[in-house]
Amino acid sequence: YEIQASDWSSDVCSSDLRLGNCQAALKSFESAETTYRQRPPAGGSAEEFLIHQAFGTCHDKLGHENLAISAFSKAISSAESHYGSGIGSRVNISHARLATIFEKRGELESARFHLERIIATLANSSDRASATFATASLASLARISMSAGDARAAIAYLERAVAKASQMADLTSQLLIAEAQDRLTEAWTMLGDAEKAAKYSDDAKRTRAAISARSSSNATATPAGSGSSAK
Image (cartoon, rainbow, N blue to C red; front, side, top):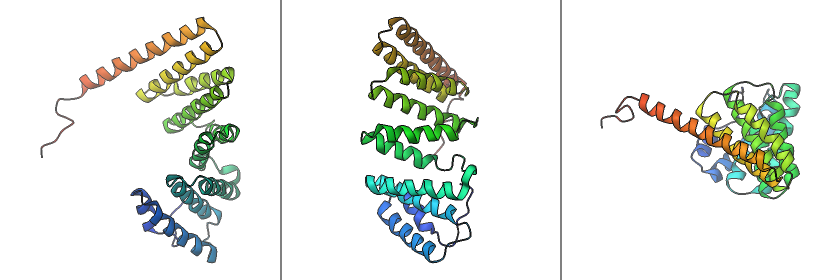
């Protein structure tokens, strides 16, 4: 997040979080927040953003949905206040977690809102990680649309997902494309268009055949014994 750890933060926070010890991490973050409130560092809401996102991550892992929603929402608000038009993709983790929570709760419009925000922030990004994140978000929007019975909206999202994944020339992108083609088959079947459903079913089979061929080629190219080492 282009922010250096300042003296209010603690190595204990991050190490506890990495180890999955969220209860201990929450106590460390609470201490950090208290220090922040007493003596806000020069970075202002940049640090506040990190604290709230950390709280959200812990509460999310612990299953505290309402507390996670509150923390992630505050993280987004803090980042927007600090970065303004330069916010970029900094808050996409918060948006993604909120989308997941809202979809699980059946609050599909709220989930859709956060997924659309992710896609908007990544619109001009061309790196592989951003393309993968955007493709996954489009696939999630398609799934939500299908759940709501809107197959045409799902098709639009899935076609965008295929186009985005096609920008990457790797195995991950092919897997994403195959999954999108499977969902397109389902959507066109729902709409009663057997011809288009068959087309995407065939496309998915061809994509998976290409994946299999590529995987076999990679395995053949790997030197024997390269995956092991002497004990």
